[in-house]
Length: 269
Image (cartoon, rainbow, N blue to C red; front, top):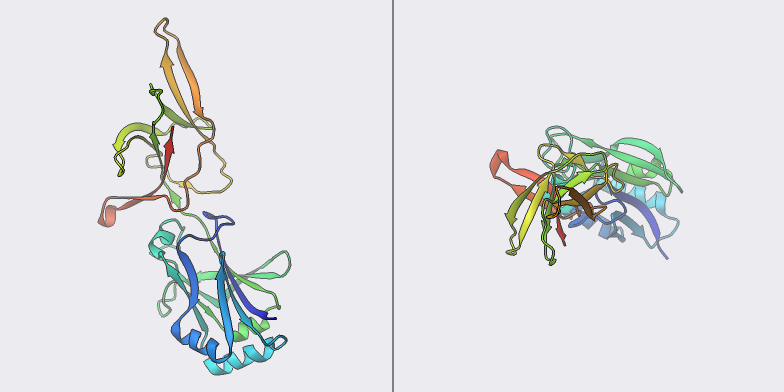
């Protein structure tokens, strides 16, 4: 039987309840060595990092021992993995180019279902490395047992791109993508895909849309055709509700300071 001493959870609106693709949390080398000396073990599962002890009921003593061992220094947990992708889909603080630094000395309190959530606030402290989480054992000891330390990341506002690949036997005449409030995406522009397929590109142009698992707008793919027997134009709906951009579907255009990132989705007919 083991006891959980500490929980750190990452919430990201792009991913919702799903794990963050290509990202994990793990202690730096110094912290990992200290945890091993105290016979503590950790696990990263889903989007949560947890620290465990096999000595049940020793939470206060273990945290006090960690505080003495660290001598006013924190436990250091690092973001590891594809930080470029995570940064590209995250609304970072002004001036930040990657995931910022977090500390248990800067928190907001909120109420969770079963325990108190403490929300770690991003810091721009130049003395602290980015993409790290500093957790002071004294702060952890003062928190209510069962507390989860949360990092809440908002999805970036990005231009959206849809590539429509027509593999059906029915040709498209005047296809277009329209939102539920009447906006029409730019396009179509014929585009060659990396796999050799020809696609029609539709995009939001200069408009950047926030990603949300429950979007306020619904997008549909339509086509118009004119009957050869009359001047009447008929509009048909090909896809009533277009899928949202997937979490890994990010497209980079350009180089250097003009490099642009967009949320891209491929649709096959």
